[in-house]
Image (cartoon, rainbow, N blue to C red):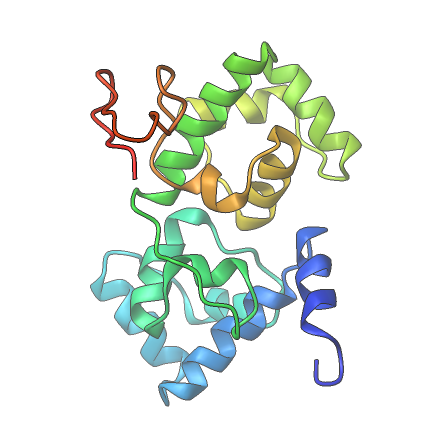
Length: 193
């Protein structure tokens, strides 16, 4: 990947490529002088069992990282969870809520706010190049299916929010995630910054 501008890598990833994640994971593992087996052992100790072959596929860009796996991988490799969403030289703050739970809650809230059905979300995702069925959207919202990073980026794009916003603390229907300066939302308790 040397010689390729970082902005191109980030744009390529936003179009669904997994190689940026693979590069981040591999470089972080090598910086910490861990073997793939060592990473797998640490993940298991954190409650995220993974086969060494599965981890190897992540490093080779052959398998997407599920949002549920991001916190454990980040802790194991010593990088902020949202670092998985950008090239290594970009620093982003850690998420404040569990990524999958927040992404599902925010996806559901945004979809309802926009008046979209699950079919509409599936159609918009398909138009953006990420084929998915209405049933899969329903399974995600019911907690029966996870969200990969690729799908997370596609959802954020289709719903008109950043990936950071999609994966952060769930959006409040009352204040929409940000009460006016000097106020506190009575529904979610969030204080304006």
